[in-house]
Length: 340
Image (cartoon, rainbow, N blue to C red; front, top):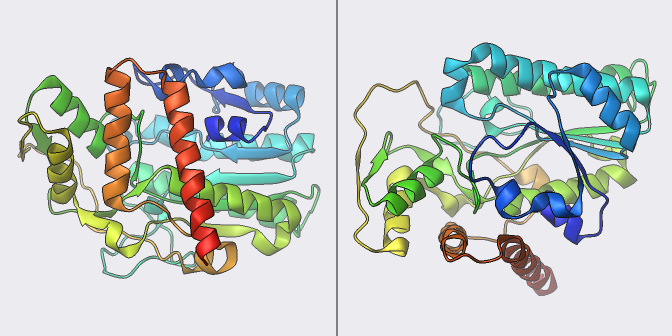
């Protein structure tokens, strides 16, 4: 998102902890080169207040999170402190300081009460989450809704005219993700190290999507919020096309085929925390009201991920390579719009 906004000419300020992995996309793609980067912790109200007071942003995109399901079982307190109270801190700073015109909270498809049925979840479905991560994202949604209804545009105490929305997406893949316990990074790490890929739940079905698809949706939503805050406030789903929902085993076998060189996989039969077996989103609202249209098939998405990692291993300039993928995506989107 930061690179794309830079390419569009935006003045970008980032507030985050140090990168949680080594290597990281932030460092490998030299993301900091085109922006102001402030190291801080969203759990610390005073740090947030200082950076927002100093830079006075008009648009705030909230992506800070403890974002891993399995980590949330090990560190539930940190997960809730970051994902729930971090959201409270950010909204409270915005409420007190004023000046922000648009606030978008990026949560997760896992915020829904997952009944593991075949239908996609719509924005009005009950929120829930049986693990700390999923539940904390549902809580973040509720906090955002309460602040919108109480303090911002159209609220009971409309102190500031802020257009407030949340975006729900999940199972996002893309180059530069080295997070632990995520399928695609785990696959690529095992392949590069020359060992079999260990898979926990090969039959689990997920609505996989390349990261650029939901990012494009977020930016469209932000533009709409800027011009019609009340009309586009609320929750929005951003998911892939129906045929992108594939089992984990399909993803593994496809990536092994793309990489070649004798890669293989095996079952990980150890004990693991609960993970939902089936979860998908109904994106009818985003498609109808925002014109949201995912551009990349799952096969193309995996191609782009493998190409990114191969470029990295070959010593390419990864800032330029990543910006090149963004430009290619924009071309696909423009062609799609012209053909409508």
